[in-house]
Structures are given as structure tokens and as C-alpha cells.
Amino acid sequence: MLLKASRMAGRQALKAVLIDLSGTLHIEDTAVPGAQDALNRLRQASVAVKFVTNTTKESKRILFERLQRLSFNLQENEIFTSLSAARSLLEQKQHRPLLLVEDSALEDFTGIETSEPNAVVIGLAPDHFNYSTLNKAFRMILNGAPLIAIHKARYYKRKDGLALGPGPFVTGLEYATDCKATVVGKPEKTFFTQALSDLGCSPSEAVMIGDDARDDVGGAQNSGMLGILVRTGKYREGDENKISPSPHLTCDSFPDAVEHILQNLL
Image 1 (tube, rainbow, N blue to C red):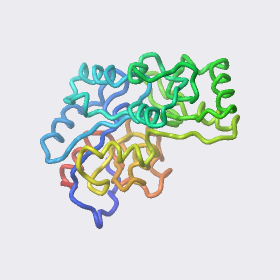
Image 2 (cartoon, rainbow, N blue to C red):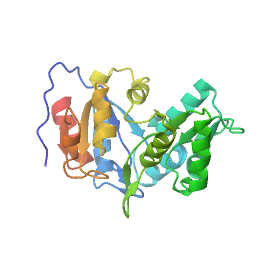
Image 3 (cartoon, rainbow, N blue to C red):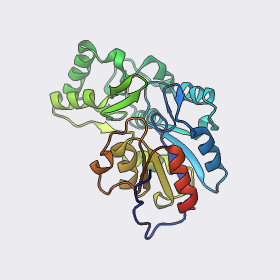
Image 4 (cartoon, rainbow, N blue to C red):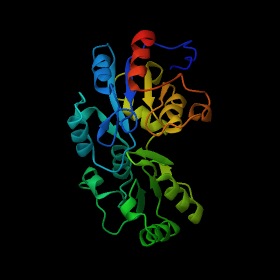
């Protein structure tokens, strides 16, 4: 079932489609039904495709290999992650981070100096979200270290159900230290503009497909793109009403989103 699409007045011809991964194309090691074929159909159209993800629990390489096993037609260099955006910021600022990320994500920070850390970087890190580690981060921030959130998602979808994201832990440190984190992933405007930067198009020529109303759709639309919300992954009834403007379209799954794009936006 599709909800009525919002008006397209003033839009330029569509040149790019940004696609969320976890919850949109797959949930852990299970693909959304029909997603591989839908992606292949989209690739036959005259649009650029890029995969944008806040996933921080594994490196880009591991994520790419997972998607390959699920028979998705994509290249590793088509994936833009919030880990990539975080690394860029660390290099720009020359920070030495305390990295609160899973070990499987550490390879994306290879070469970044981490001795005597002077910044706190938080992703999804269940194995490190304990009192001792968070208290170390707390003390560093009190002593002036910047707090960098790879993203602040409230929760995400696993095969066993919804699970806490890094957002609650970032917010806890913000509350305790009376500071605000710098967020680098979705829904930040800079994340979307970075993702589009090598595709040769403006936000008004792009659409984002995702399962997170705030981070995927809201962030994209606040950046000047169209946003399509899918009812897979972390979607919960009524999510489309949590953002303003509302999604360009809310539909059941990624294949439905692709069908709408092919029929109405090209």
C-alpha cells in the first residue's frame, strides 16, 4: 500500500537515488524480499545509485561482503558510511580518539592515532557500553575533550527485535557533561551533501529511501532531497507523522519505492 506522494513542484529531474542499507535492503543476514531484483531494475534506469548507512557495528569491507553474500549488485566504493564521515572529521581536526565502536569496525580507522586520546567518538558498541568505559569518556569530556557521535539513532532492527542504538548513550554523556555532541552521520545535512558530492548532482535532483523517518527521510528532506519511507526494518506505525514535512511517500518496502521512482520520478 502506498500513501499519497507529496507535490513535486519545482523539482529538477531525478539524477540520484540514495539507499539506506540495514532495515531497507536487509536485516542482518536476511534480505528484504524482492530487494535484489528491485535494485537491478533501478540500475537499468538513468540514475546514479549510492548506499548510505549509519551502520557502525562493522567496517565497510565487512558490510560489503555481507551484501555480496545476499546477492546484491553493488561495489564497495558505492557505500558511504557514517564511519567514513567520522574518519574525515578526525583527520581534519587531527584528533586522537577514544573509539567506542565494535572491534569489527576498527579497520575503518586504520592509521588514526589513538594513543593519549583527546576526543571521544561513539558508535554502536554494545561490548563497550559499560560503566567503566563510559565513565572514562565522561571524565575526558569534562576535561575538554570533544564528544563526537557517529550518529544518534535511538534504536535499530535486529533479527531478534528492536535494539538500543548509540543515541541513548550519547545523550547520557551530553546530559552528564552539559555539552552537545558533534554528530557526523544521518540526519546531518553535511552527511547527505558529502554522499552526493561525487555524483555530480544537487539535493533537488536526488531521493533517499530508508526505514528511519527522522534520520533517513527527515534528514534527507531537510537537506533538500525527497524522502521515501519504507515500512520494513525499524519502522513503527505512525513514524511518518513524526517529521515535518511528511515523507514524499510512505510505502511497504524497497521494491515498492523503486516502482514509484520508475513510474513517477523519471
